[in-house]
Structures are given as C-alpha cells and as structure tokens.
Length: 55
Image 1 (cartoon, rainbow, N blue to C red):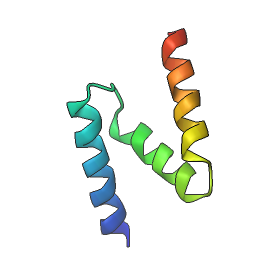
Image 2 (cartoon, rainbow, N blue to C red):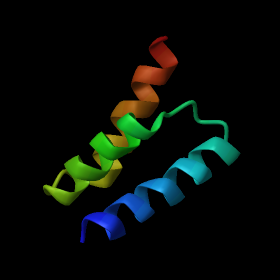
Image 3 (cartoon, one colour):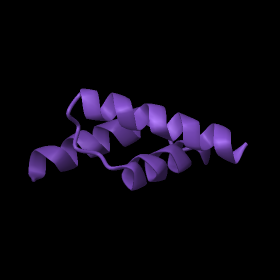
C-alpha cells in the first residue's frame, strides 16, 4: 500500500509540476493524507486557491 501511495504522490507531483502549481512533494503528500482522512477535496482546493491569492 505504501508504494502505491508513493506512486500516486509521484504522479500528482508530476501533474503539479506540469501545471506550474509550485507544490513540492511534501505539500502534495500532506494534501493527499488530508483527503484520505476525509477532508472535502473541493473545500481543500478552495482554501489553497485563497491562500495562493493572498501571497
């Protein structure tokens, strides 16, 4: 399971890199874990978008 999770994170990192989202692997892993624990992905995306606009 751990290697599957790492593979998912690697894929998400590549997507983030291609889209120039400025997310490192540690941040992506944190987001992945939050969603895995039941955090609403749409709410999480909205929060990240808002935080990005503030910086």
